[in-house]
Image (cartoon, rainbow, N blue to C red; front, side, top):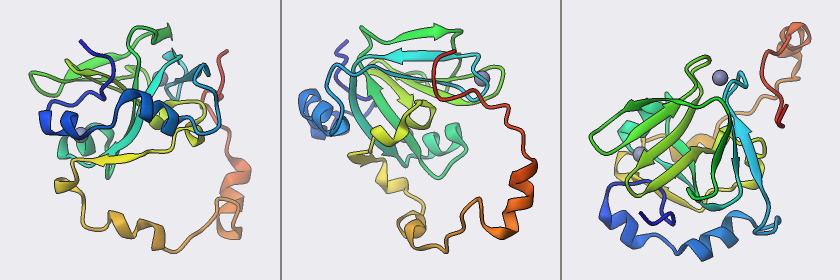
Length: 180
Ligand SMILES: [Zn+2]
Ligand SMILES: [Zn+2]
């Protein structure tokens, strides 16, 4: 198995994908190639360490929409040889004969896309998702008709007046964005 591909079972995608070396540069515009990325689920029962990142992407296919409960799935392919689960491990659901979807059995956070072509981790599960800008979109034939217009929607911050009372009372149970 070559670790240089985001897990996808369509050969035309693999054929059009940029090389791992180029993608590593694109994924880590600021950090060195030796940077170690960590992350985990919302409750912290599952944590991981990913020394090698290959490509950050979003996938619009219907199976990714369903698996993430989202309009599209943000995924970062990782180097399987060096990737480690450092606390717990995901539970898995076989969404097809070729693909497994990993998630935290305790809190439900989507965590993986695993195929014979490689392992990809949910981008939002990383501790530093801002360091993982996507460089390509997959499954665009299934893209929902409004996703390109999301950036034009009206904007409200969480500390706007209407939301501030709610935010003042909130006590987070979410695991912090670092190993504990
Ligand atoms: Zn969890
Ligand atoms: Zn997909």
